[in-house]
Image 1 (cartoon, rainbow, N blue to C red):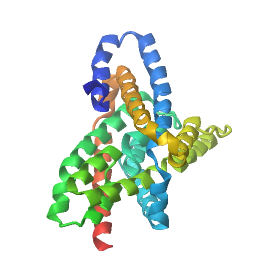
Image 2 (tube, rainbow, N blue to C red):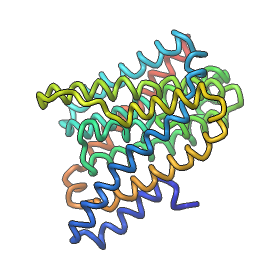
Image 3 (tube, helix red, strand yellow):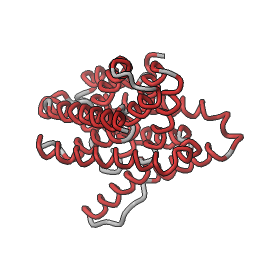
Length: 292
């Protein structure tokens, strides 16, 4: 179904926004529903994270993903200052690059109270770079004669979204797919501590008591339940389908709040930031894979 595709859902919302632009109540309702759907979708996404795969990676896998994520955040912080980017905008793009694309952006956005404009731009950039990754990674891997294991590790560290990691690595080979999926799931696990960290930082800035993002707790509970409770495994596919539909509807709602004048004011800097960060991460990840 075409409408379920997140990028087409966002595009449809943006198109309709031109017709409801003067209807402020509609836009407020779209924003409220988008926020609720986003959090529910993040909870259901927890069914995709299998802790057995994470444990299989061991300490080395956790260390690799930690160093990778920490490096991306350091680069992102430097790049945001260099380009004088909005704090929330740069954080969302960095989060999406560091962990797992749209899912990570969706998890962090409510915690830092990011507006719909920041979410729209961040997810749009990530979708574009993800699409490019699927097409360019396999030919580069073949040109450099990367082994199946090396390509799997490279794609898991450098490509944003899990679905694009799976797509690119499956083109390269079955062994690459296995390595990429396992490492990517380990990388995705960092959604939990990083989101909690930014929740703590937000509480310090506002001088209010830290509030635990309940949807992240739900994400963790779903992950644990679908890893260790065997009878639940048969429901994994339907839950993931509902989660993807929820993300699509969320993006549709976000698209309804689209404001062309605000986009014009933002300019090309977020795209330059996001693409530059992705290229640097891609190159550094490739160098790491080649020397190890």
